[in-house]
Length: 394
Image (cartoon, rainbow, N blue to C red; front, side, top):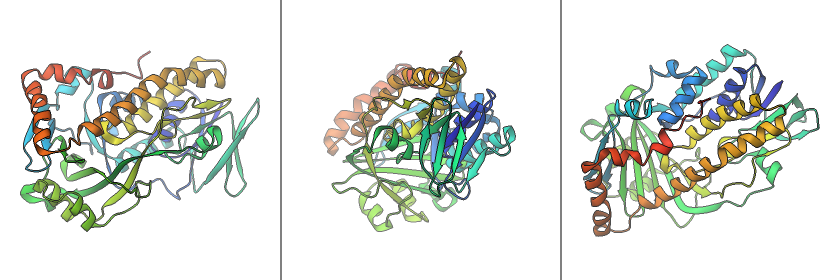
């Protein structure tokens, strides 16, 4: 059996590995001339780490990952701490796996190498996918130059602007959420005394919030900011913005944030659009995965992790069922409730972090801080359904 996978990102590579481990031949068709990712940080929660371990890439990541000391919330203006909860060591004890930060490029490189170790010719770069067709016995990917790849199934792991999804379900009509996101990665040694803490830290404020993490064993600081903005920017996380606009968006914020913005070599800016859960992810021998199936806001740090879960479950369901159609149907029914709940939770978190005025913020967040301090286990328990989930369980 041969799987054709449109997209060589995290979800596409992970699904290729998961299928290869089960005896499938795979071909990953990636439009870029080489697999590479613009520098950005990812938070991989324990549910994602379990999949990485099952795929055989966890060991390769240990040289570059950063395990945060804690998760915390601080006020954007002034930097006052709302709460701080331990994470280093605690995640392993509570959820059976660590909570880590990783550079996206490092994760893609590890997945790429693992796949090539399994199948040396599995990745086809410079392949611009324009669509697919299928019959009762096979499926094909059609390239922009008219050439085709033929296999038994097609997996659309081609991201937010999925060509496969558009053909499968028709053009979508995303809703602008009213938020624009910023991101940057800065060497820690540029930041001096204003380096962000060694934690997964969310900074909350008036119609905006930011998240800071550390990458590459703590040598890089990663920044993501979300700002309510009437007019959308391009919906592409590769788009850039001006330093002056970023400084204005986070004017008078804590020095840990302003210093990051001041010292970034590049600042990326893109609009965040929302999409309702899809009514289906598959048709015949074709299925969607990751952002192509369930794009979500970054406010739960689950986008990449949910793609990893998808990859494992999809391969597992295909192995359990006699036909691709039955396997894809089982994959969808297994995943749709969970991914829809994460989509909803991500949107809710975005609203939670943007409480409107200073007095209201303290009145709203102070009880949260008191609850975290008095009952940290109960506070962590709210994440059990996310972090304690094991997609690799039999």
